[in-house]
Length: 68
Image 1 (cartoon, rainbow, N blue to C red):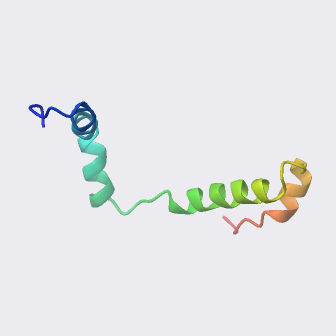
Image 2 (cartoon, rainbow, N blue to C red):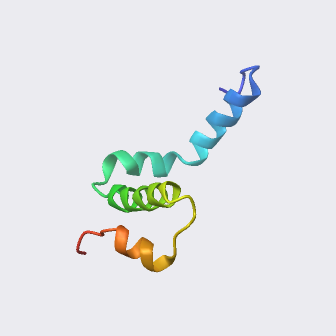
């Protein structure tokens, strides 16, 4: 991809080459950060629904975390 005339494509290909080991690990290893991302997404959704009018205590009551 070095010979492409599209600079965005060259930048994308360069980023893929730099992260090649991490990309391979994503397919080879069984670990995932999916459960963590699910909780982060749930928290952000709750904050948006409450229009910023919530305290930390109220968020703790609304956000039900699965036992660890």
